[in-house]
Length: 402
Image 1 (tube, helix red, strand yellow):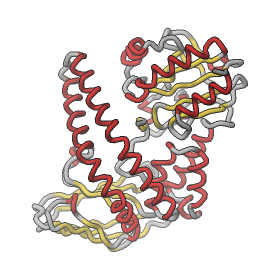
Image 2 (image 1 turned 180 degrees about the vertical axis):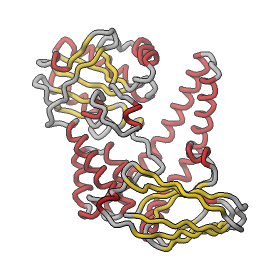
Image 3 (image 1 turned 90 degrees about the vertical axis):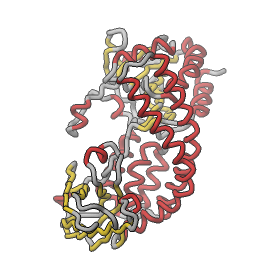
């Protein structure tokens, strides 16, 4: 199972408000048994802009009005704090410029149904296709979330390392059990994308999925989208993802970078010209990355004398000690290590982060490995948006022999 670095936000669609006409919408709610209280609606309203509105419900009824330039995913919730953490009673749906109705007969928003939105009908089709898998996945998901909360609580309580390691082992085991269901979900999602190329639901779904697809597959899905979908907010983001993935895929020149390595010395990718270099994008907190280290050590031991180098590019910019500890514990200090250079303060403000190596290689999931030839050209991508480890082994064997 790979760790995605691209988390799904509550609202994925960033609009181009200055290029389209805003049209009105009305959303009326009827939630039987809902106490008189404030109800909140959140949705994307422009480039990197999110609108949050509130109304006071009366006998379970409420009405929101506003304008939209294109269909967006919205959420209605009751508690701001819980909503921030994806918890509490809330419902998500696709809203558009229309008269829409949200109804629930149980008093729970999670069980409410939206009508009046054509895009939501597409979402209902996808939800129904996912339902059998989601039913099997839910117990594991609940167990993981419960265990993760306990693990975080133990970290805050500064419990002994042995206790924390036990939690990590337990959580990794649950993740492994979840993986087959995620694979099934991916097949369902791709089937939907293929059958509904001109749906806003597809645009949102592909926006999330494309960074983990081989470049050719992502480009094929994008090519099937209509000009309208390609020019939608998510369509534009999909294009950006594909451009980033292309820069980190075979046939492109590897981005040259200079970093301070784990020992405090300067390291430049240019210094490795004439050798085959594997950039290993990983993190100390990434279970699959750590589990793959013994195999990387085996490959390094087999090929390093033949001109093969590895540079670990870690996603541990916020925790240098965890990075150094993982390198030492896994015995991978035998090759070079640098940090990716992520500046969260810039990322949160949507500002350029030119020091972030991962951005130049289209890295959105861990582990991902990039193989570079002696001339500085990318000749292999393994992991997110690339081939598997078996293909990597085969490629190295072709280069260096057995």
